[in-house]
Image (tube, rainbow, N blue to C red):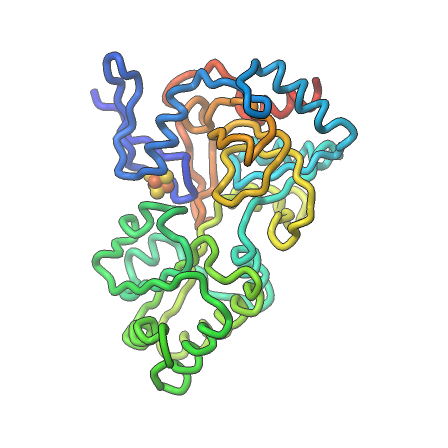
Length: 348
Ligand code: SF4
């Protein structure tokens, strides 16, 4: 009997159609048309991973001790994560309440700017299902494909008109906004975007990583909010920004009625620990626990851990914040989970 389809734990889209088979001599194999997922599954199924101190492989005990030496006197440790499952998020919150760590979400300046803008101005958010069913025009801004490689497939983008902008600066967006209000054609690169927006009955704007130029993120995000209100006078216009840390944000809000801190906008803040794989361009930390080890440039010390959703059941909030999904374990692991490893390390 075929195994039930698996929910992928490797990005906030959480595709629910991954086929996993056990193949003689090869162990577990995931069948999914996604490079990010393929790398994640291959890494997780390898399981018996080495710890690392600097450039050298070592035992987990040696790595743990080395990190203790590097971080002695740093309590509360600053800990960054792109996002975790529900139980880990609760435990991180408890460790923060106990004064052992300070939790920060690893997100770009534009993601933080958009969140701040909509908290002031409000916006019309949309779910993946809304966009798939209703949108006739998609405008993607920033790096959407690298972050969520199957997003276009999941919202039937091939059936819709679609335009793309790289990171937007305030001037480019102002030109587009002016052209739409004045019903003129913008001077340069915004022509295709402006035409597509004008032709839309239901416009979905999808914000990827680095949607706005970092130095102008706040102004650009506010301008986009205002453009949305204008667009909604004549058509439906919504925004989707998938959030890797949707689960952690929800837990912090439920448990303490506060907003979880972000790494964005404070380049000088010292970061001690990372839970999970560092994204491209991530700041280096002293100790990384779990995820893919990307080397010394990302973490001085690496402690391996099992993978949530592969080796352990878990629950996550999907990146559009609308549904809670069960992640189901496929196989057992010799490693503790990242949050168990963190507890072991902190109490050692
Ligand atoms: S898009 Fe994300 S959730 Fe979907 S298969 Fe790829 S990594 Fe997994």
